[in-house]
Amino acid sequence: MRLRTRVTVFFSLATLLASLSLAVVTYAVARNYLLDQRTAVAKTQAFSNAKSVRDQLKADPDKICKFVIEQLRTEGNGFAVLLVPPGGRCATDQRRDENTLPAELFAAVGRGTSGVQRFDLDGKPYLVTGIYIAEFDSTYFEAFPLDTTNQTLQRIAAALGIGAAVTALMAAIIGWWTNRRLLRPLTRVARAAGDIASGGLDTRMPPETDPDLARLAQSFNDMADAMQTRIEREARFASDVSHELRSPITALAAAVEVLDGRRNDLPDRSRQALDVVVTQVRRFDQMVMDLLELARIDGGSTELHREEVQIGDLVTRIAHRYGFAEVPIIISPKIPPTVRIDKLRFERILANLLDNSKNHGGGPTRVSIESYGKHGIVLAVEDAGPGVARGERARIFERFARGSAARHKVGTGLGLSLVAEHAHAHGGEAWAEDRPGGGARFVVTLNETM
Figure 1 (tube, rainbow, N blue to C red):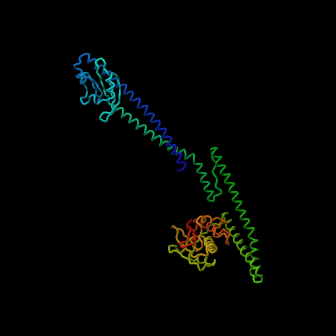
Figure 2 (cartoon, one colour):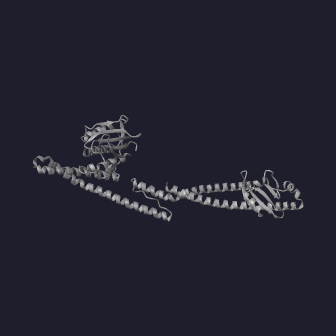
Figure 3 (cartoon, rainbow, N blue to C red):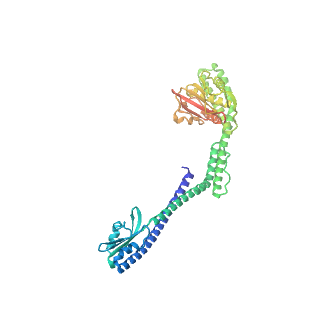
């Protein structure tokens, strides 16, 4: 989960927990209050009716049942039961008798005490009050329905639950809005850092009005300034060194070529030394050329010049130019006759891949061009060499990186990095994979519309 989501969820859950706790406490207080009020009213009415029953027993005990049935007032759905020894029983509802009363309360009142108890009868809640009439050794019970009280409590519980849910929802909305405002500066920092990582070294954060955020923005901008200065200084240094080396290397290469042209006049040991010098000078010259090209790419002085080219003819000419005329070239029929690419960059990509296969893979075995998406092509160069270890497939496209199979062979360590740079300029990428049947397959994607 994202930080903003986690904070919002935590804020919502904390608010929901607090709301539910408050709702539970409120419900408990309301329930106790309503039940206490109901119990007090029931006891008052029950004692009043018990007094009327006692007065009737004094006045005319023979008509006590008629009095209970006809004149005793009880609540709707409520009932009263009077037990007069020996064996006398009167009830306002003939369906109710002492067997419908709670046994505990019935036994307690029979021992001469009074009490109140809640119980369920026919699935409905009741509150029964039991009173002992000592003067006549009689017991009087009156039951009061609790339907209305329970319905009131249910409404209160529903209202508190809805209130807690609404409160949590409002807390989530407020928390999300607050987090968005608080994390907005971090979003700007992340966006600026991403722009710098993508090559926009001149990206800076705008000034902030908040003192803490202003300090963050200033520190970030200072860091970006220092990093840009250092990168540009190192790029200038590499470019300057490459330019300074170009002239002496050119002169040295010319002198070596003159000596190589007269190698037949030299003794055998001198020829061997000359071969080493010629190989290393050419390698050094190629490295300087590659460094100059990378310096121009880093400095942004090279632009992408797209033009319509016959891809099949272009690949064939490049293969012939660099001495790979016998390598099979497979062009997919899905490829249109002409594509829009930078011809010079494409030549550098293909030439470097062919040289790489020659130096480290025993020579290329096939070059293929296939379609890629709606507006792209895939260039693949295959060889039957030892292949590239999985752990090295990403690293070999870095500058001066060399795979384990190329550590003791000729090369500058810059060819594949140039391939990756030119592929990125075309909106594509470069990678290495296994070739079916053994060997390596170097793949480059180029987008025609970027």
